Length: 129
Image 1 (cartoon, rainbow, N blue to C red):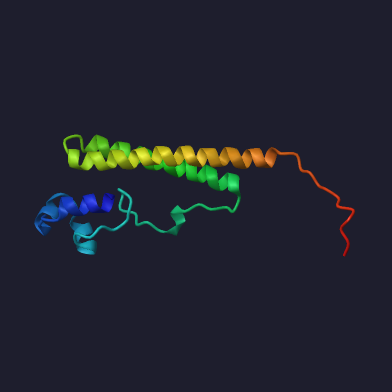
Image 2 (cartoon, one colour):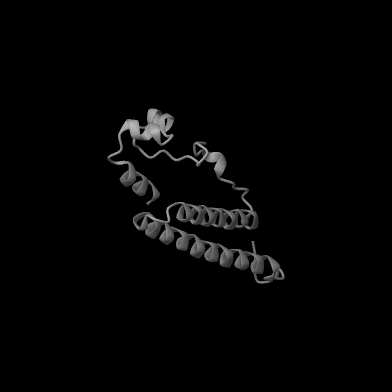
């Protein structure tokens, strides 16, 4: 969705306008295409993904990622106060981050409850090899 918004906002922008807006280097590398990178120009790569293989650590990372995305969307909204066609879909995305955060929180509580359960081992004396 964000890529579509960027594409729509830059569809009729000339290279001169991109340069004047401070996006000359971006235009040189990517044209008007959407390239995933941070606001500081750092390209997305797999190092942004943090996975330990531990359900509690991974769910905590997921929770943090949702909050970071929500915070980013709020900053975009603050920057685009006069652009309702931009703000409305960004608000929708922000709301989704809140829901994702809630679902990951529920999953984390479920994992923690499961790990807190007393282990029960049963001896089946009828079992033969």
